[in-house]
Image (tube, rainbow, N blue to C red; front, side, top):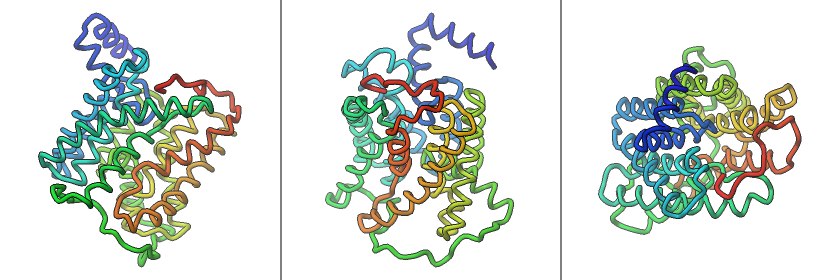
Length: 334
């Protein structure tokens, strides 16, 4: 794998087109903090498989459009070249591209919004990053969340939006079917993988497996933390009595997966204190997920990855020194 990575890096360095492809692949991988084209390739394969299996191929197309537009926007706006090459301006766009076709289907309005939203997510990325760099905290997936929330809320005010996947606005209520404390092993295994795949709003076990393989190729600790983050989230949700169907579909796990990777391996170098800190952050993310589910239910919009964003910001702002390798002062677009 290392030889293949080196060969690809040499080819990308000698060809403008391949360099652009490399940048886009890194943008996909940066959703889970990986600066790796190979990881990004597995992520795109996972998205394509999941979109095809779920009968929503427009999600895969939206992911590509969002990835390209978000990266192009960074070039047009004059973002630092090094950040663009690392894919730091592609990952919010790809998430916007996955989300909008999921909620609006494949319509002309939706595709205009995918392009506009992906571009705007880069604008938000630059703005939020500049604001947060004083505190040595990156924007995470906040630009994706803020951009998508604005569009989703606007959809209730305009007749030409075709809403296909948004939750019906409702008052909060306790779940009628709490998850069993000791679920079936097969159900548990599926839920763990779906928790990983739902990072890209796709509930598919094969997709989750492809994501874990891609992560392992870039960083084995990241892959382990992703799997463990999903498992810990399931245990926490079961202990607290979360809705069984929501847990089975991975809806309590995906933000926790990102928190576990971020705190466990991306921003800190793994050791026993980091593991405990990441565990605490992962549990907090599940509680934040439940709280935001309640807060947003009357608005009829999903939490997206905001529970992770809140957890990451809160757990990184103290700037606790756990022998950090990559927790350094971010550039304006990091």
